[in-house]
Image 1 (cartoon, rainbow, N blue to C red):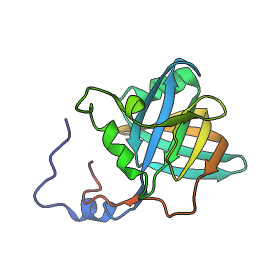
Image 2 (cartoon, one colour):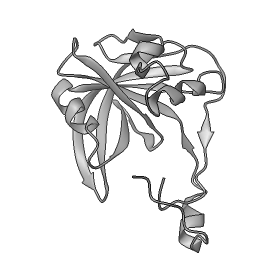
Image 3 (cartoon, helix red, strand yellow):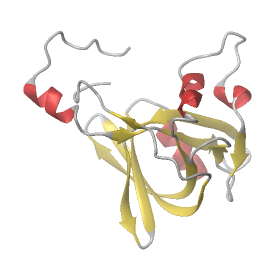
Image 4 (tube, helix red, strand yellow):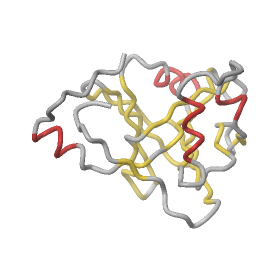
Length: 166
């Protein structure tokens, strides 16, 4: 259940809500390179190292994705832009015909098997480096092993009104 936004936000909630985030599809395969594709819309993602390149993504506790990434040892990130951000809708529930996002959107396999959105602005594929417990989220760190940019557009950016909740 998604918490309701309070009628009046605290100054802290408003301040944190001004931190911009990107919009991404974070994907993996449950059980290895040939497992069923899994994924979610993520916004808490950032690059945290250059050599080797490392990114991290925060995943709310209780969601199955951290364990799926642990089992697979890899994850993909599709970076969205204005042309591709409509793909997020497929991850917010079943389509009218009962199909999930991996049945309704075009995905490709990255070098090590992670699914990446064919229409994404860019994508990267990461090898799991570690997971850190962080309050109500778990932060997954990954060494970037492959990636590509499809075009030179600007990535989609999101601002939350409430920095203390979704």
